[in-house]
Length: 300
Image (cartoon, rainbow, N blue to C red; front, side, top):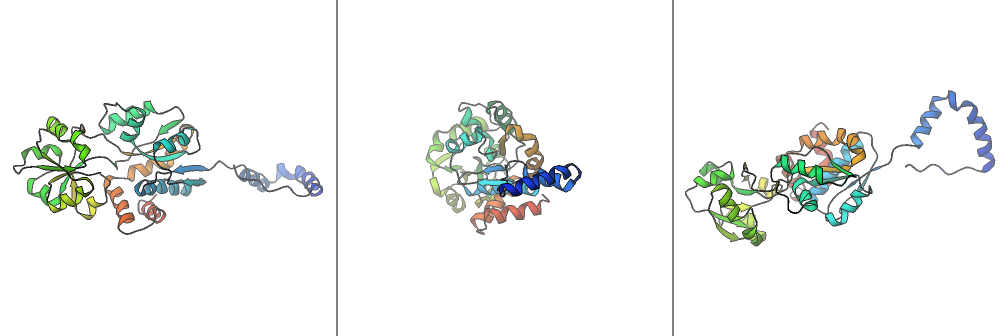
């Protein structure tokens, strides 16, 4: 709550109280001032120690401030083990999350994969003190990505289109991709696409651009998707676990917060999130400046 002003000298309080007692019921300005002193609690917005997550958190914070709410920022906290207890006990009221990854935090063996299924199951797995608002189209999840030229030359739009490519396919990604359910074996069993696997690690995007590999495991919010003109292939059979951006909020404030943040999520597309990340990594803009400009451009 807002901090009230310190008391005056006792004698002054006594005299002032007698005067105000007689006029408080007839002075609307006095009543308005009193209501301001008992204003609503601050909304605490948190973020991970990750530039993309901080940008989204700053967008949430500024949108809430623009709606007239008082906001406190608690950014760069760390991973879920660090911030989730603060969300559950109400120390933090709003946090940008990712549906699939958050669902796995609460239910490691989930079988859900599509955006709709993940979101529905996540709602049922959250503690009673928490709720999720509307999810965005934007995501930060695994994908199979190709260069623009390779996509155009082979008429590729989705992962299943890779099955008709005549050239030998070489898949690049971190070493652990070889054993992941969505790795080479999952790609073949789900889409009938056979590949040779190359453990490219931190140089996956560079190898894709150089042509060392022609398909790569790239996160969907990677700014290099824009700067290197890459194409994220659609995943109609939900090989990958969907992880859409979603606000996690204090449950008993969800209705109020949803009025402000649901329109934000509606505007936050995959392309928009990548562009925001480019402004951070390439243009070196601050999260606050990026958020302010984006909200203005979106009419929010």
